[in-house]
Length: 299
Image (cartoon, rainbow, N blue to C red; front, side, top):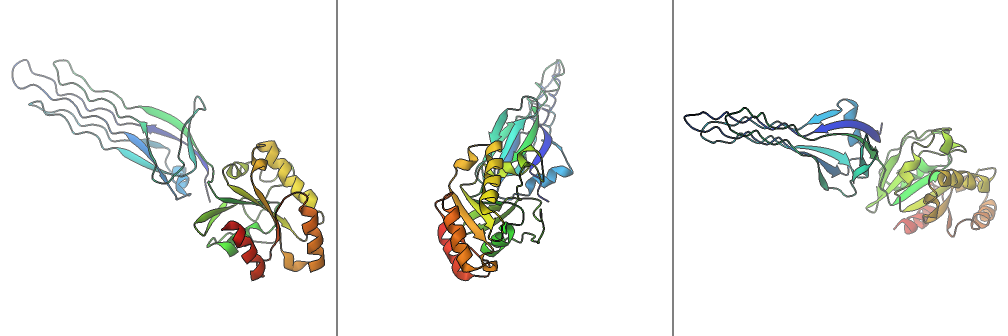
């Protein structure tokens, strides 16, 4: 299961206590600084799953100072890996603190506390910074496969990429986004939308956010549909209600399962849908020629 949101607490390490200074004799050293907390962007989209078992992350504390002005050892930094596309949101203010957009990006989130001074009066050092945050993952993909349930999105993803998305002849086979790679480009299979999804019907709006960052929409419509225009408008309307900027993205309509209807009927459907989009491609996963036509669009 892909977890795409989590709430966690991050805290820098506490600074080490200073070694008390003697009135006579060697002075005490300062305590070591507490470790910092960083987040590191990774291409592993399942990394939010780690927070189902742990939700508090604290860097190592600094060590106490020693005699003869020796400073205590600094606490080790803590680095938490997160998927690319993750926003780090302050839980209290709801303000986005950072957004990880490329693998290898590393951001300091919580600074470790200052170490205590070595002096006559005890100085125990300072606490590290603490942040309670919401982690929100939005898939970053070149193409987003969208459409009603059972429109053939997952089958198409499996055929084009090395993905192994679950498929079946019933609604909501896909219960979480799937991702595949074709020619070094990412394709995201977004769970099927139904009328009213933006108001919580079906699988609701939980996956609509994953369409926000895709570069192009691949709108899958079954050739066996009773009304392809209705199917098209249903999905478009729900996306617009969620975020009207989504429907401004480049779009290709894919008429799936084209092998299951007569060729003459496919020609009619293409003419009908060309009134909605500039590019309409009939595709069957069992027809290599139609798949090649689609691959040219994705290249």
